[in-house]
Image (cartoon, rainbow, N blue to C red; front, side):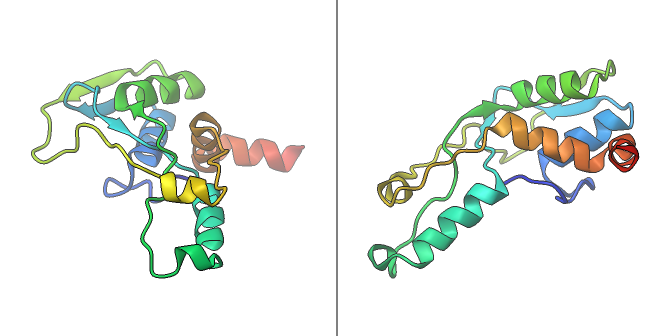
Amino acid sequence: MIGPRQDASAGGGVVPIFARRSLEGRPLTIYGSGAQTRSFTSVRDVVEATLLAATSDRMRQESFNCASGISVSIQELADFVLAETGSAEGIDYAPARPGDIQRFAVDNTKLRRLGVEFETDWRSIVREVIASLDPTAATTKLLT
């Protein structure tokens, strides 16, 4: 799940970490090849899906996977963040971390049967995360 106000410290998620490092003019670090995949799902889509499931009699005492299911590689994410921030710092590759998930795959069929559509494009929410961490974006917003 991604969205503005996520933890951008070293212990946070990959999206805000990449955004913060790129905005600071520092290279991004990819552990492993970058081919590992994730499903970046907007926090708004997760909230909508959770509310729908919570109010559905069909979902009573059920569990469900709440992720878009769209597969994005860490390399694709890194390239996108660098392009969006205009950073020329590039990427440092480090050895893969033990236990790192190589392929994140999710079956969200139960939620889709309820009518849930994960509508927020991962790129647009990454742009929001970048904007939330960019001090010049906040200044620009105040001036307009």
